[in-house]
Image (cartoon, rainbow, N blue to C red):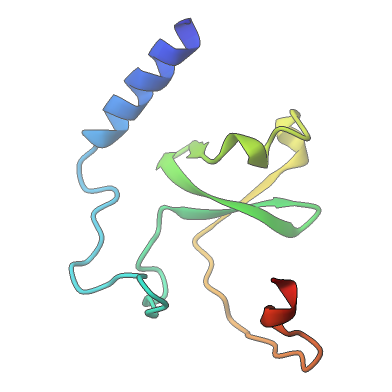
Length: 103
């Protein structure tokens, strides 16, 4: 029960933080629109063995909020790497990759 109270207080504190999370008015990522590099500085990449497994949000200078299913297989924090402040530099196209075949 105490965990739920702590989570509620954490979320309440995050919602009142000033400045963080305020995106530029004209920048958005909706329906496939491009975002300018570094326009979403609180977004992180959660990685295991160098591979992206989930996204998350930087909620303080040392805390990340991500979905529980992202960390349920490996409860050790040392098994994860958090990447902050990087933009994709290269897009590699592969002729054998077809998104429609996945569904």
